[in-house]
Length: 466
Image 1 (cartoon, rainbow, N blue to C red):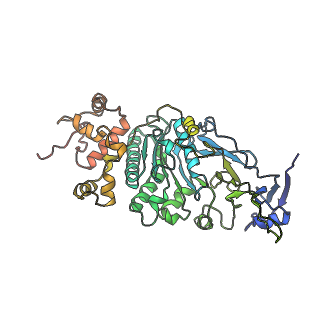
Image 2: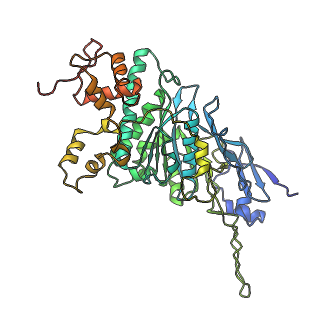
Image 3: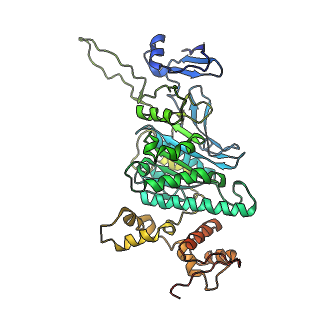
């Protein structure tokens, strides 16, 4: 039976710096670099293990049980090389904080499948998700109908983020009135996440909404977590300057959940310089093809295709976890081979029950300037904001917005909050919740369509043209 060789090393004070994995493999005479695992221990100790084959190659399928949030607010995404679980925190019950998260990785490294796992976990755990899939909806197509809000364009993403920031601000004011200093899950508000996949498209240099997108994400990372509104971004770019600027995201990411899948050399350099990895540390590289050994063919040898073509999709480092220098891998999410349509295995994990929460009323966050640009633009022309302000196909046949319904049911002398909620839920439209209504009321007040509170505890429309 193949055995694992283990070496325990005494290291200099402060541990090993500038570790060279290839040199270590050469010293141990191991051609397949992926079989050698180096891990820095506590104190002055390190461990080197040589496995018969890469220990992360044979992963099992992810299960519903893995993705049910435990009592400590964590889900199990996979395992480390020594079979201990890879856990990702969605909620901290000790502090009441939602999380700030980021997943980095180059093309084909496994971001989309990892995103699917997080989305499924949120649905199974009763967490409301508002999703932006900026690859025109192709990254996680199975999420359609499985989240409260799903958008696929940059402008819609800005509207979604505006709505999330408005909800965080509403909660801050409401909790202050209640004397509550933090978020208590489901009392009365649910835990909410904004998730932006392919976030580099929104935040890279030259993107039309880069500045506002970076600002809104920063606001959610700074203020949303204490009121149960979290933010997770997934991106190919490693340079934080390509994600809205390093000053915007560095502090947010350092204390959140950061996962690094297969990377480029530039990405590694930036992670170190931005403080997400200790200076001088070097992670064991994640190869695109695991187990490949580069051999020199002699002049009389026939070339053979002996690569097993074992892809490293899902191999990662949890940089803000308890073992940031230890390689891990996600469980298998969905079908191994591409499917002709929606992946049935992923749909089975989501389940057929309705997702928690209500969609964000995107049109409530369109500014007057953007609406005017849309109205004034000739057919097929106009600014990016004006073009995007037009309701997308999924929204165009939708019923009236919450804002339109509020203005329609309000009499001239107004209503109290409970009266308004009852009227909206009796007008034949989709059932609405208090949080969504009060967020929309706040937005309408900002637009001058509802009067500011005057102490009478009534929500009153502003009479136009009077």
